[in-house]
Length: 220
Image (cartoon, rainbow, N blue to C red; front, side, top):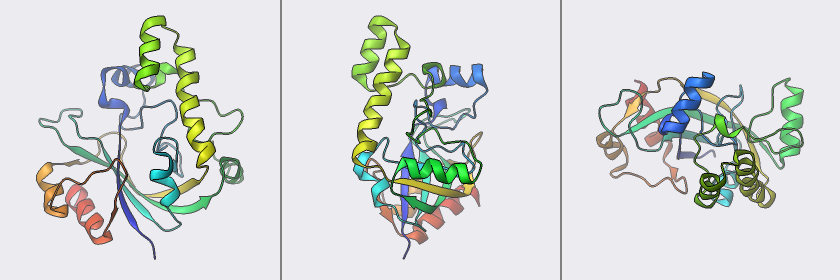
């Protein structure tokens, strides 16, 4: 039996550096802001890996599972108050045991590799394509030296260590996705569905009827 999950991520539009990347490169505002987009919403088949959360999320997912992705809480675009945006509802259609298998799968479908597929030749995004918000230790080094290329190498290395330990790769299809102006959700709506504001650091397994209710509140 498939399961349902609720997850959050930090979109490119969330901070000033990300908004500058959007302005310069015409990126959709609500793609992920890191050097390895996680999840990668830009693929025809969006992908989920252990890049950011290690063992806490991707290894738990199986074929048929569905995930509702919200932004982290914040003010976006012309929002008058802090809240969330429902960006995507994804269904896992293929669980693969390695990134090399994933690369072969996308090649067979004649699709570009997602950013979060760690195989030779698939490089991380340049610093100017990101939200400029790597881990604090790396960010401090960037501030001191201005060596953005080194920052990307270090940032990417932290992700590579995780996927070495947890190499599972999830291919999904989008039941819903909106990367330019996704629908808003407010605190009272989340409380109405869950009775509280659910934690998403380790994305919770939720009742699928609650996921459906949340989606209906957002998009009707």
